[in-house]
Image (cartoon, rainbow, N blue to C red; front, side, top):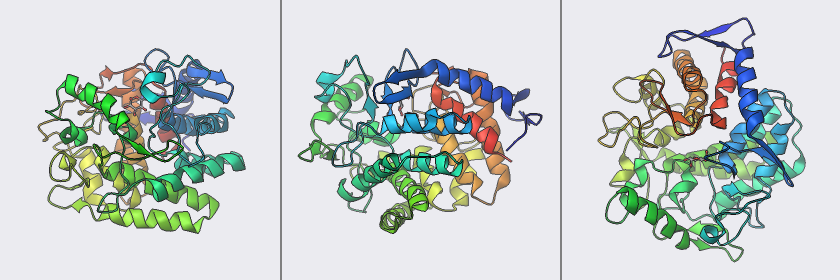
Amino acid sequence: MTTESERHEGDGGHGGTLPTVAELATEARSVLEAAWRDDSAGGFCVPNPATYPWQWLWDSCFHAIVWAHLGDERAVVELRTALSAQDADGFVPHLRYGDGPHPHAALWGRPGASTITQPPMYGHAVAELVRLGVAVDGDTIDRAGRGLRFLLGRRRRSPAGLVELCHPWESGCDDSPRWDDTVPGGRTPDAWFACKGDLIGRIERTAGGAPLHNPDFAVGSVGFSALVAWNARQLAAVTGDDRLRGQAAGLAEAVEDRWDPALSTWVDDGPTSTGSGRIRTLDALLPSLLGRRSTALGQLVDPTAFGAPFGPRGVHRAEPTYDPATYWRGPAWPQLTYLLWLAATSSEDATLARTLARSMVSGAVATGFAEYWDPNTGRALGAVPQTWSTLALVIAMDST
Ligand code: GLC
């Protein structure tokens, strides 16, 4: 851990001296404190009080990790609350409205929670909390295992064996160019918006309502599948669950087979596999978490690819769809940078991890902890502050 007196020198886009870890911790704590909401299931941080005033699944898993780094007992409370709407099949909704109000009951067909999921970051969150010496209760660990087993064992697989998404929102990368081919009539903002609502009604479900397959969005996403496999692997390392570890290994192999050396990316399976599923997005490099892939990771700091002072960019700069200022079309996203920084820390390239760490801390500080930002200029985009940008503290604390 970096000591209070050590500073992260901003030799990337920031130009100046970055805060100490202690200063960063104070700022991160104040962002999380302001976002905290007690509720009858425990409590959680809203990602942003105005733009995102409910509980999001993968956001809360990231918050739990930051709380744990702050030594705050809300780490377990937030994780437990995020898993509290899990159903009997193991499915965990991506949105919880908590004690209300419940403005989207008509969209979901029920008041308290959504009917799709998000990346199962609870496997990693449990592992991180345990690594930090936080006592995670058995019920929370059990719920995390059931959530992962639902995705690995019940969710429909694509022909190449990837875990299908039922909706673009399940990826967490809502407007990624990877989904463009699934929009009938092309990706105009109106068509995209209408399509996302209609897609919810097309999902095939278990008798209990858990989402299994969507004939209109049967995308075998390499990014989502990699996160399922990696979270299962992380959880199994803590629980010693060999069956889960085996399922994760099988999925990891299927993901690995999707590597395209000519494009230097992993290619999605299913309806987009010959089109938008080949666009070089940052989320498509998440399989780097599963093994060493220096070609994939090297692109993150290459200025002709994803590398930028406050990067990495969300989309490769040579892609026609690349737009550094538009939601999911090219800005830097802190939660993705955090995940790819983790992949870099287990690679042999220490400079790569350090460069990603600096750009993340620089971006979070320059933008006042924004939801996402322009990777070239560090201009804040989306909601400010957004709680998941406090992952910059985790990176600063865990960088050596
Ligand atoms: C946006 C993001 C999604 C996130 C949510 C709340 O919709 O695309 O990944 O969970 O905001 O932060």
